[in-house]
Image (tube, rainbow, N blue to C red):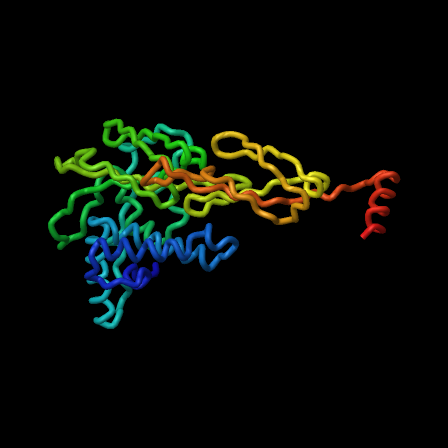
Length: 309
């Protein structure tokens, strides 16, 4: 198994504060996010890698465990890396039976849905978010406040309207409110929501993944869509109905509209997560349908038009 240097991946010092880690992650996530790098496999892989690093370094318990592992791994390297590193001391096993998800389209809890995470993450941290902290290896320091992380997928419409998810953690039912305007990477923390077996209060952290909607591209709070317009409407002008997140609106097409021309529907984008009354815009790009299988009369009319140029 290959050791992952999460500090190097994020480009932060081992003594970096939580705020420094968060700020660095946000910059990198914005730079490599798939929405900004469509069909770019290297950028997608980099995004997954920095996301994995942040999942560890932003969580006090995981970071403490990772630092202990790092110290042990460095000592082994300094001894000449003889005999192979003892990974068995650090591997965790997913714990089942004490966490249940009641919503059908919720994402897999870590441990069952780690396809985007490396073998290193799955082996070392895959069992930790499953309802109780994993046991620490010998020599581990004082236990940190436990936290329980889950991922949930929501549709773009749910992100537009806001929605809820229900979880059951150690027999306690929790309802999580996901605010309007949520985006992929939104983190919702429920402080002191559950108690660990040792009696410590623990936080429940929900990581939101917003699924892509067919025919809609999202960039922050703005939406981008395509609209097919027939040739005659593009040439002569007219009106078309455009679907938006809150229903159809009528868009006026001016005469002489060109292929690829874009129109702005002000305020028809996503709500801002910090200010739901404020919305982004929807941009509609025109695709003009060229008629096929013309009748002889139609061909004659087009020929006459061509001769008048």
